[in-house]
Amino acid sequence: MCKIWAAACIVGCEIMGLMSKNTLFVLSLMVVIVTALLTFVLNSGAKKGVSKSELEAAVGKAKDLYSQQKQRQENFSSGPCLSNDLMPGWVVDIAHQPRQAIDDLVENQCPSFIEGRAKHFVELDTSGNLIRAQ
Image (cartoon, rainbow, N blue to C red; front, top):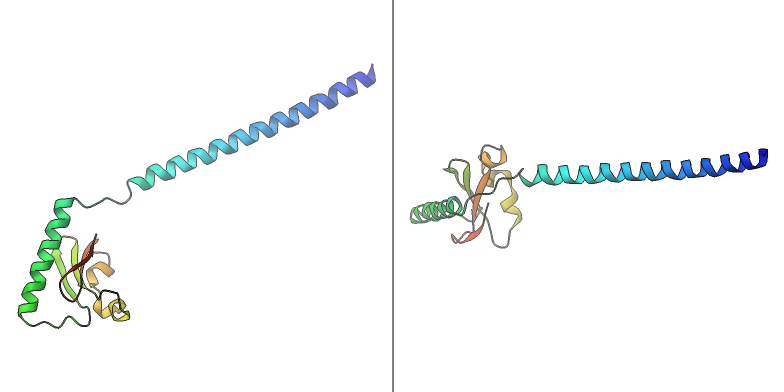
């Protein structure tokens, strides 16, 4: 009788051990899934995109400003910041295509963008062609 009881206890303990491992696995899996979902949801709205019309307006204004500066015979060879305030939250920067080390110098960057006052930029090459805008 004691041997049967001992065997039952051993089997019961093994079942309980498996159950607790399964329970722990399920709980861990749930934590991972919930964390992944929360990360996705919170990051999906973190960066608000720019509307197409705002982007087009910024690029148009940047090209107009470039043309005005070009008529004044502005030197674009150093890749200067053309405007710190193209539109609210926008700057215009001149860069080389392909990019050169001079383009990364602080004096050739737009201070408003570096300091975080502007969140968007239009980057034109030294000939006034669009490199990128965001």
